[in-house]
Length: 449
Ligand code: PFF
Ligand code: NA
Image 1: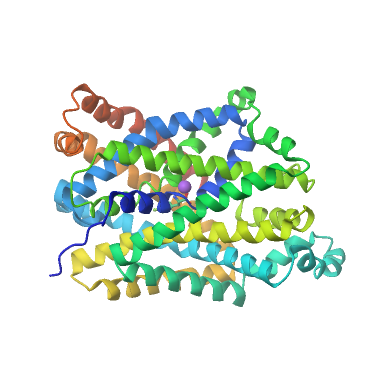
Image 2: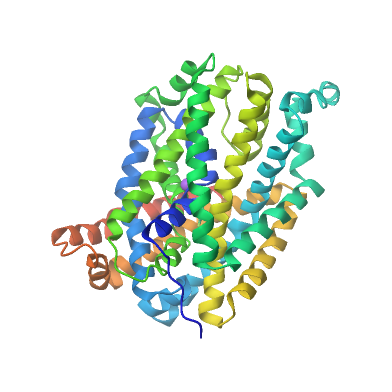
């Protein structure tokens, strides 16, 4: 057997985890949920969730991965016994499902990026004006309908999965670590650049106001929906509940301070989500779009294209924006495929490149129907993050909080030192409040699905 790989550097591990965390969740959901959910007031609630739920939960995955040096299935068997392989199996299935549609959506971004290279968004929209007038629908919607299904979508889904497979096939140091060392800094630089640029737009102020003006009333009136939404978003955005952080931590090799690394990763993810809002809303408001919508997959393409066709410099900034999102999606997709690949390598003894190609190929095929009909997207999406992710997180919390708490605390203390009552606080946070949050979120997710 080949020796299990490890990250070359601590930065490599952190960037890989950040690369996984930063994705469509930061750029889709976060700004929109915040804008609609009461702005800065919602942001506060969200930050509380991330700190009180996300942080303890990411540590759970880290200790499980580092302790066992295994993929999620192997890790759970080692900690909980053979019956836990079924729970581990759910992680693998979740990875399959999420990645299959994530790739299709990511393909749209590549497509829109390339549209920007071929000509301005205004000129592309102009091509749809006549047809739009005829059916009485926005031109940008027709354009999206054109690009998001059929051969176009199929082609870019193919490209995106091919790149994802290629990176994972190259392994931890030569593939993932190298890739994220380029991609994550690129995402940060591009977003900061765009945020500075859009600051000069005519209606930037109105955008910031919509995004951030604190409305505690919205929370008071809608807390029944907002709180689970904030919890669900906290898990999705940090890539929790499907073994990504278990898998990445399994390559740590030595005992580092996991609390410190977790803080850095969460800080990055939250910072980038926040920054995206500072980019997106000035653009919308300067284009006269004052009801930016819910940020559903279709809606953002439509309103974004309209905005990039309208605002000064929209061509260039649109190109950068779509490109940035594609990069962010790629580093998340890599982590999803790595979970599945690590499972096949560890448990079935298959060589890495064969595992990546085989599993990536099956996931690719599963995504193909989505390129034909978006209805599959809704089905897969709702099931995967509403139900599977939360279920996975819940099982982990039960295992670590109730079955192997001592072992977990000892593992966390490696690289930190004696935690004393902090360790107990961590375990009790997992045992009761976080467990309750997960059960409630899961129940609501099942009902909604
Ligand atoms: N964290 C990613 C995002 O915010 O877009 C989504 C994600 C990636 C969720 C990987 C789960 C996962 F395993
Ligand atoms: Na995220």
